[in-house]
Length: 346
Ligand SMILES: [Zn+2]
Image (cartoon, rainbow, N blue to C red; front, side):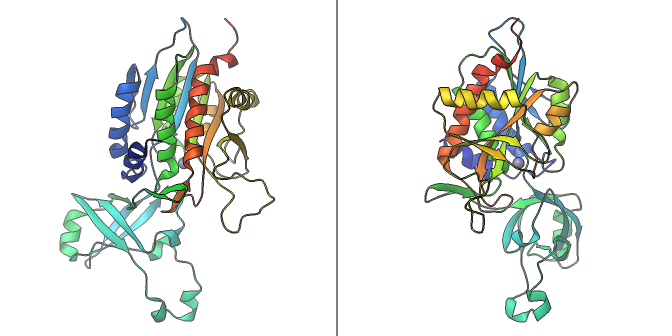
């Protein structure tokens, strides 16, 4: 695993609609991996690799660049910034954090809480709500208001760290997916399909970028690459449907947003077997990925999803297993090389 690239991707600040810092990293990579790079008004990047075939089908890979973030609504005269969430936040995971505020310049802010011994009984038992929280810009209000205005965005600050067998940090959802897409493209041999490695925007606010990217590309086959919850953390059942860290890339069969195309699911299982790539199935009634937007765009596509099992999704300590990441890279490369098997013989 190229920890340097994964670290650069994960540590970059890129909330929905403001993916530019991540996009710059992806652009540099795609320039070396694709025959050309297309873009669109929402800022998706589409690295196109032309096919060896004359009239190829189109395979779209999609990995979203954005992470959950915050948008400032108000900066008060004491230097506290209020905000609304960009994407799905659990407010308690924001307390106790440093955040990077993209104002007129980059600023560090802190999200604090009342000391436990100063809280009354009721407050102690109550989970915080986003609207109760504020970013302390740690400066006088006048200066804060000059540097930060409503509409500016913020993300958590957290280093990527290798801890025990795992890698942990913020925004592994979905920088690990972006990483897998780039490394899968790097590892893949010649393809009989035209490959579109698309880094999408604004997934966390409703799968938006993938929708227009898919409309433009009109893929025949599409594979989103994203995290899925690992069901092996504290408090998760030992005998339930489980996706576990270290057990391989997850073939996402179903979630709340999409049912993977059965032929594509079968192909992924088959080629994983042929190539000794460890895989596990992920079946859930919850969550969603860009798969939905692509499956429903235009005249539709044969769509599915490769997932990287992740503990503590949407927190600052998201954790993945490098072996699963490597397996997902190998599976992505295999899909690139073998996707043509799903197309009618010409
Ligand atoms: Zn995601």
